Length: 279
Image (cartoon, rainbow, N blue to C red; front, top):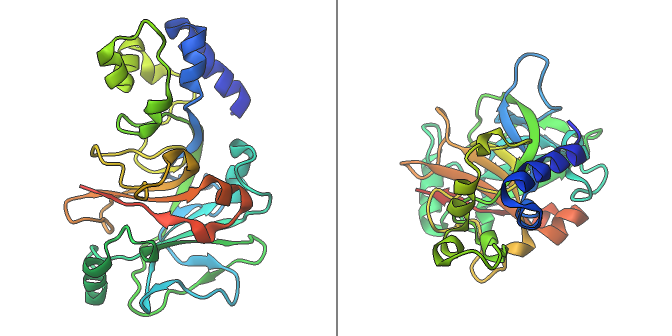
C-alpha cells in the first residue's frame, strides 16, 4: 500500500461528498498510523509485538521509578514502519521499547500499586520509551519485581487516523461559512453525518491498538495532553488497549505514549511521556 496513493484516494473520496475545499482541510487532520493486530505465522511486522523481553543495546540501564523497575509492554520495529511515516522518524531509529509501571495486572508487585497511588500513572517517571539500533539490540531479561507478559507478535497495517470526537485538533478545522452553530460545536459528528459510507473510506484505521496516528479518548478529557501544553506540538506514539493478562485502571482504559513532534523528528525518545486514559 503506497501512502501517497492512499492519501490521494482518501482525499478524492471525501471531495465527492464534502466538496474539494472542505475535504482538503478535513484530510489535513489525518495522520499516518498503523493498526496493530495479532500476527499470523510469518506475518509479523519486524520485531513489533506486545510483551516479551525488551530489545535493548548492551549496557542500556533498565528504566525505573524511585528504584522500582518498570515493565516492558511493547516493542515497535520503527525501521519497518518508517516508509509510511515520511520524515517523522530519523533514518535508523531501530526498535522502540515501551515501558510503564504495571500496577494492575494479576502478576504486578504490591510495591508497584503503592507507587502508582503516590505518583499516578500519568507521571513522566511512570513510563519510558527507549530506542535501540536494530543491529545492536538484544533480548534483555527483566529484573526482579518487573512483570513479564507472554509475547504476542503484531502485524502493523498502515492507514490514516482522524482525530477522535474529543480531540482538540477539531478546533483548528474551518467548516466553512455554511456551517451552523451545532456543526461547529460537534464537527466530528457533523462530518460523519455527511459521510454515511465512512467505513468504506480508503486507508481507514479504527482499531484499539494503534501505533502513531492519533489516540482515541474514551472520555471528554484528553488525558495524554500535559497540562498547559499545546496539543499541536505533540505526536502520538502508541495506544494499547487492555487484554486478558494486562490492563490499567481497574475498570479499564487505554495506555498511550506521546512525544513532542520536534523530539520525534530528532529521535530524542527521552522526551516521550506516558499519557494514559483511565476510565
